[in-house]
Length: 284
Image (tube, rainbow, N blue to C red; front, top):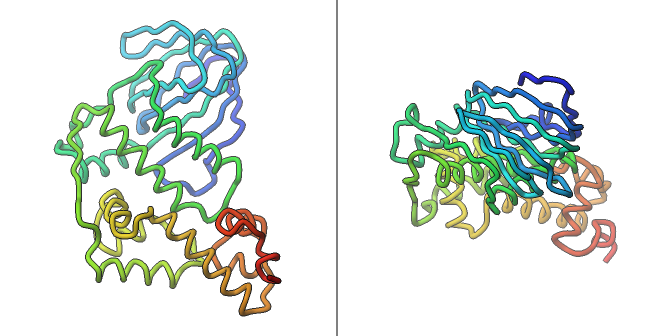
């Protein structure tokens, strides 16, 4: 991204977190202006400012000037340069999605040649789903959880499909009904159980059945009633319960054996599911 003065300040970034196909960064900027260009990424900007700021935005020969407030979004398609100027301190979440990844999802979900796919620019839009997904991604950045890749991939897929459904030049989304066949479902569940201690990716699970991540996620939820990342977390908690009661392993060892990054990561998720800490569960 090419910037004019003053430089932008990145508070948090997923740059080195191992997140695939998506880059999420939280910015805080003093008053200024910028020229931005992302050749291979679609960009979403979600305003986090506590009070509206005055913003000028020039993109594709169109100019928008007005107030941007918390929750407002801007969508910039890949390879479309834009200029913006803001007159007071700005705070926003920037979400960049790989254009190759969006084409891959489009190939599986919409009736259009991915090479002809166009994402339509948006200025000062309101979209509750994008805002909700953005805040969940920001929470993951703030918590610095290791082993949350499946969750982030699920959010990335959800966000990409939503963009295709609402902001692409073709909005015909394919649907899949009936859930996974029993033998395929058992295969996936056995894989998850075998590798609970690993950082399981959505792409890994979809590849087991030779299908797209979107297709797999949709059918898995139809079969199980919950998303793949929710099932994975549920099973990690169940294994932790078993190890807490039947072994003398330390809580740190149990956390790592169940795919959590640390004692505190296990404790936080364990409390969400059981309303008590692992230590309390062990002695009860």
